[in-house]
Every structure is written in structure tokens, then in C-alpha cells.
Length: 383
Image 1: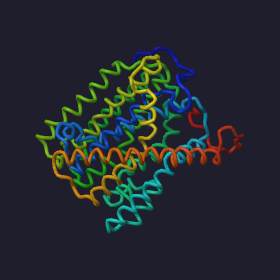
Image 2: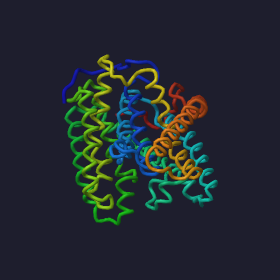
Image 3: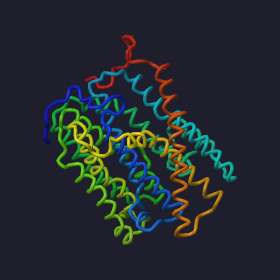
Image 4: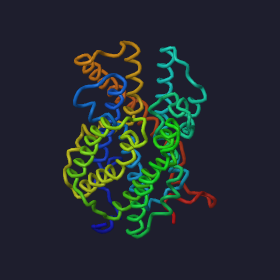
């Protein structure tokens, strides 16, 4: 690992966008997931659908990004655990609840039965722990990843206490061990039935934790001045090249086989996404322009969480109302309509629900500035 020296107060930008290129990258990762669902559910667009056929890997990006951003933000901050957890609840739960209500409403309009247990599990953020598809897709199929994120938040204070303050070689070998564990666990679970294997590899919070912890290690290294070994253009090229490589792999191996690119696209992409995130963050810290931190990219990045939660609901409702479009121009028009409507809905959800409700919950919840009783849990980052 190469280091540029410690960064005790690394704040290159104001507010929540201290690393603006990471906010911009969130939009591209969300777009990858949206195009994946459009291709799989609504019909393909030649040239695009092949490249995004395994765009569900965008979720892996968000898992790695969560680790990087949380480590960057909370290392050394000494925020009490209950304050940290309340902040994360305020960040994700209000929009989750709204999206589940909308999703259940669409299911009802389609005259489709809805599992109340699945809806309850989703709202409690535990639905990804169940191996039954009806449970881990819950009331809003796209919301399964929030169950994993909730688990990451629960274990993050302990992870930070364990890893923060260590020497660079500890982070380096931890990253190597995480990648090695991925390469072992993927074939190790190959003997499971297809549905169980898919759940264990793609949904289960325990296995997905490998990607989050990799992000935590990368975030800690960045905080201490580490410089990634590749530039942002090279890292972006590696990510794009990886997804293009999946095209011939997909032609050769059916998705039902364990060594197909379906799980590989999500598991093996984590180091590439970590390199991309770190390269973008390093460029921000060095004051270099990336094209990811402009005003509109920041807006789109802010809307990406709502877009991720709402887009599949829009696709489902449109397919129910109009039916599956014919190949060609009709499919392209369907895509354009869904993108426009879902992005507009995401912007409104961000402005009217996500941001104001998060702010209100933060104000009424526990504050890091208030005196803490002697029996308060140790702060995040305490050694």
C-alpha cells in the first residue's frame, strides 16, 4: 500500500458531499440496476441489454460503497453507537416504508396475493435472512438489500473498533483474506439446491458482509492517506471491461449453473468496485476534476436511493397496464417512459419524504452533542 500521509481532517467539500464523485457514482450504479430490471422484465434493447444483463452487480457496488463511506465518516468521530444506529434508521427506513406501501398497492391492483409476513419482515429489515423467495423479496422486491445494509450497520461499530488504528499491513491482509474467502465460498456452496444457493450467495447478509468489510478496510486506508494503485479512468475501464466479459460467459454457461456469471458478476466485482470508489475518492481529495461531481450528477446521486427503491414498482405497474412491449421501437419507448417516470418519482420522493423525514428524525432522536450517561454504549470507533 502506498500512503500520502494521514488525513486528520479530510473535508474537501461541504455537507454530505465531502467526496462528491462518490455521490455521482451512486447514480451510475443505480442506473445499472434499473437497466438490468428493464432488460429482464420489459424486453431487451440490442447493445445495451447485453452489457447490463448482470447489472444487479450494482448492488455489490452499494455494499462496498457503504463500507467506504461509513469508515471514512466515523473513524475517529467517537459517535455513540445509539446515535449512529438512529442516524442510519433515519436514513433508510422512511423511504423503505413508503416504497413498501406503494409496492403493496400495485400488487393489490394486479390482484396478486401479498404475504403479510413478508411485508412485516421487510419493514423490520430482516427479510433477507429467510431462504424463501416470497420472504426475501418481501413487499418491495428491490428492498431486499436494505436488510443486508441493516445488518452491516449493526456490526459496523464492532468492525470499526477492531480495524481502526491498525497498521496498513493489517488492512492489506484483511482485504486479501476477504477476496480469498469470496473465491472459496462461491464454489463451496455449489452443491446446494439452486434456490437455496441463490439465496445464500446473493441475499444472505452474512455472505454479503464480505463486500461491506472490504469497503470498510478501503475507507480506513483512504482516511489515512492511501493512494489506490490505479487511476480513475483505469478503474472505470476495468469495471466496464468486466461487464463486457460477462457477455460471452453468459452465452457459454446457463445461469442455473453455479459457475455461471449470475453470481460471479456480483461476487467477483467487489474488488473492482472498491478500486473504482477509492480512485474517485482519491481524485476528489487531490482536487482533480472527475466529471462525477457536477451539480446535476450530485442531484442524480442524491435521488439514486429513491430511484433504486421505486423503479421496479414503476416497471411492474407499467407492464400490468400496457403489457410487455413489442421488440424494437416499442421496447425503447417503454424504457424511456419508465426511466422518465421513475426518475421523476425518485426526485419527488427525495424532496418530499427522504430528506425532510430524515432531518426530522435526526432532530428528535438522540444527539451526539448531548451529554451521555456513564452506562452509554461505547462510541463508534472507540478502541
